[in-house]
Length: 136
Image 1 (cartoon, rainbow, N blue to C red):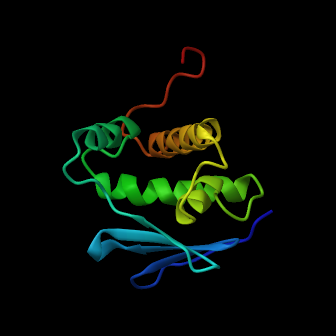
Image 2 (image 1 turned 90 degrees about the vertical axis):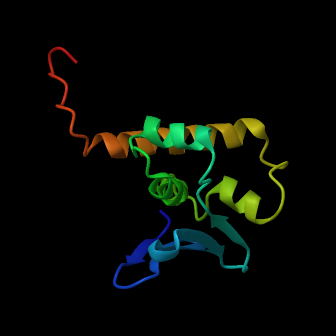
């Protein structure tokens, strides 16, 4: 399994995943993935994008698109580690300038997993009552 560690003391927050470090700068509303080879993938929320805002709401973030943005990238890393990978294939491809070798289907599959993971994580602390076990 890929190694995962984190340090949450002062800004920036640092998360180590296999061959990548994920940095979060809350005061700047900026996050980025840095791979061991020096390539980077920035994570900047799309502040004026109504579709992006609707996705944040659908995933349980309300209007907090910043949180949705950095959590999305973090979830790419977490899922990769859970699957025993040292990197997220999608983030690696983006960092290296081409997603062609992965194919649209593989990218869509990873994105779907990440979005569902985010939705489930947010449901864990929802103010909605838990469904009745006998009548979900």
